[in-house]
Image (cartoon, rainbow, N blue to C red; front, top):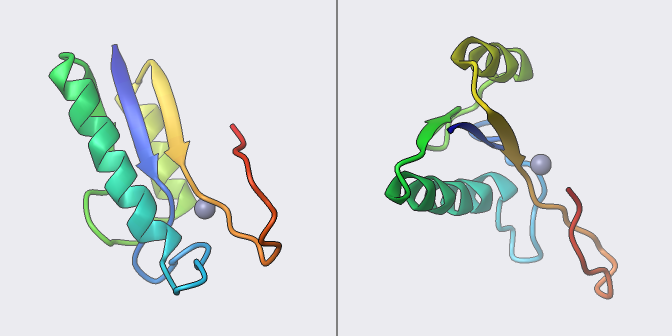
Length: 91
Ligand SMILES: [Zn+2]
C-alpha cells in the first residue's frame, strides 16, 4: 500500500499551542515521522508533505497527495483546550 502522511501546520503556522507553548506543528511532526518509520519497516510506501518545520499551503498538500495517487491520506493534528478536563481524540 501507498500512504500519504500530512503532518499538520509547520513553519509560520504553529497550529495549536500547549500550556507550555508547545507547538502542534512540532508535536505532529515527531509523531508523524514515527508513524512513517513504523510503516516503512513493514515495507509500506510513504509520502509526506514535510519532514521538517516548513509551511505548505493546503492547496500544495492536496495537490501533492492527489498526484501521488496514494491508497490512504492521513493528516495528523492535535487539539488544545483551556478546559483542563477535556480529554479524548477525534478522527
Ligand atoms: Zn491542527
